[in-house]
Length: 218
Ligand code: SAH
Image (tube, rainbow, N blue to C red):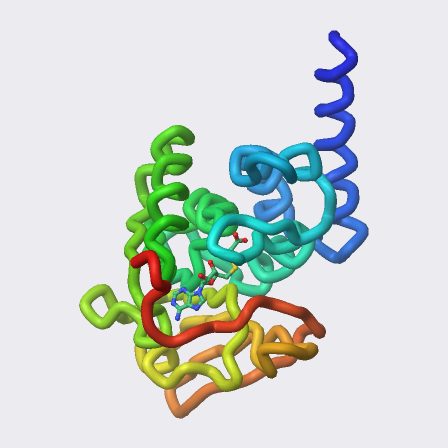
């Protein structure tokens, strides 16, 4: 094996080890994250840092989330193989790709057209055919495809957006960061039952803000 190959496989092993030691313990989530190569979703200057447990800059001033946070959010979403999932904030497409391996279908929206177009190219390359990506303002959800078994938001809202709560099925789960745009936010797991919603705070996080309307490029 060449030095660089050894290096990459070692870095990938360490990547999974770091996920485990940060609390990602679900075997289904770990094996999925082993098969989806984060290196496909980080380009240019930061490509060499793809296997570090850190958020990294992507186009349009956005970020690809920290892998251990991606793992913890995916675990908290508890996705079943027959589930239809809505993801708000496609970004690099990394989280979308992981969800697509766990669910029946994933709808993913981003307010930046450029990010949606770039992600779609990677989904085609990786043959992830159960992802439907749109350029849209996700704060309104996707009325025509609703309701959803699972909803994940990967940008921070001041409060849980009402239309997304409405578009969650009874028995469904939503995971999202809630809090101020420029401060520490809480990762929340919302479960919908017959008579209302249960909210559980999971951990403190820092995400880019959920913004209303489309990006200037869209
Ligand atoms: N899961 C992504 C995270 C990207 S950062 C990843 O790991 O790559 C959050 C993303 O949310 C950004 O791409 C941003 O454009 C998007 N976003 C913010 N507000 C939005 C909104 N109202 N509707 C859709 N996408 C939104």
